[in-house]
Length: 401
Image (cartoon, rainbow, N blue to C red):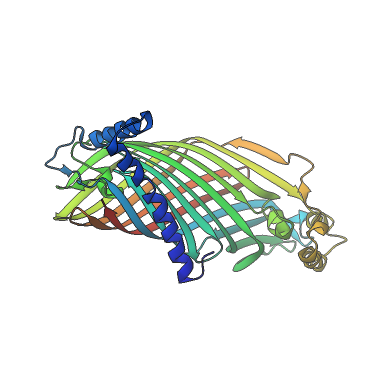
């Protein structure tokens, strides 16, 4: 994690220099010569033509400077909610019926800083976490045209703090519940990949590019119905000996992998209250038509102590955990003997994707932008279910040349 102003400056310098490395290609292409040079020239010419193809120039303008370099700050928060119902008697001798455990794991309001660069909306960016809980990084790719937008986003983060709700029933018939904040001895690791694409039915007057990567201008207010698709993958991993207690409470699940394919329709609108100012919003409900979940279950010495609760007590489990801090092998973590890996295709679910953006263009050369997005993905397996909700807000200063 970056901890000093100097490290932040170094990151920005490296990121911006990586973007600027593309400039010699343009200069070289302008000088002519060579098959590669001609190919680059044709690609850039094609992108230029796509930027103006079919647009109503009364509503959409195209900057005369095609290249962009953006310094970007980001606040990001991811929340993973899981719920598991297990037979309480397998773990605690004095409990009957069910034991419900609902951990809520959040990444905190983490701050990232980085850069983005590209040509007329075709570009890439990288951001690194500089404050908040755990460690994280963001990598993005994007391509926008007159009537379409395609985005790829990779986010990885770690956190060792979470809130948890437990509910249980004792042998005397009384019911109890508790909510508390606790921590893991080893961080939970979450990685997600999102690839989404959109088509605008009113691409001649509504500009997705003006709203979300500032490679075009919205001159007059306009909206558009839209359709879109999304591919989502996540890997949630907390399978370590020091997390044996949480794994046991989560029905022995120590890792989850999820694949989703969703299709949806929605509406987007660009509002131009004054020259150079653009307020944008987009909302798209999506049906998850393919929802595959793969879970990995694990056994441990702590779980065996829970099963033999007439021999071992909670103090024995605490002592085992203390020993595992010095020597993780004493936990004897291994895949569960029966059905260690299970795959399930969940039913169709409703997710959603929402965006909002505020842009102020400082002439043709520079602009300021604030952009936010919200995702929600849900999953279920037997008596276990959960959701990953993620939002972020970007603040950007961009230069065109």
